[in-house]
Amino acid sequence: MFNRIENIKDRTITGSFENLEAVVNYVKSPNRPEIKHILRARELGKGTDEYRQIKTDEIPCATINFNHDRYVRSSTITNPTGYMFLDLDDNTMGDVDMNYVAAYWRSLSNHGYSVIVKVSYLSPDNLKQSYLQVGELLDRLQGGRIKPEKKDPFQYYTEYSLSWLQT
Image 1 (tube, one colour):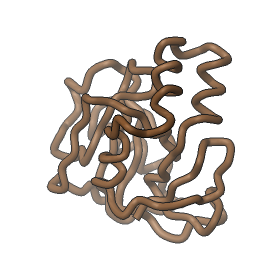
Image 2 (tube, one colour):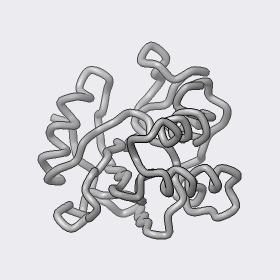
Image 3 (cartoon, one colour):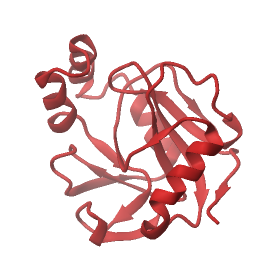
Image 4 (tube, one colour):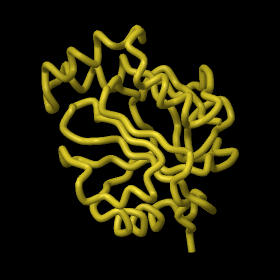
């Protein structure tokens, strides 16, 4: 299960997604009410005040790394989801080892990708080290804890990815 929040600023949990496939199906749904905001943000481009406002106030989010109790902050973590979110800033997935990628889709800016990796034994205590190790494994990813959901026809999902084991 993955928690859902209304936007990055309001981290109150308002719902959930049953599994990663449900998150991906939501991301690619053309009937989401926030599609107009996503298209406007892509038109504006990263770096403008209006783009930042749309990103933080208008786009729902799913918490990928951990589930939380009622509100998303480090003190409310209840359990890991078995996945880790990473942000790929380049406009290509060419160098990434796809054996470990469970899902990906275009970022809000449309100049990168949101990437989901299956992981085992992720915890708040080893999160930073895990990002370094998984980034090295995948060869160039940057991590983040909450991902804005986006609409993108360029997506990938598989339930058969390899699981990276935290050591």
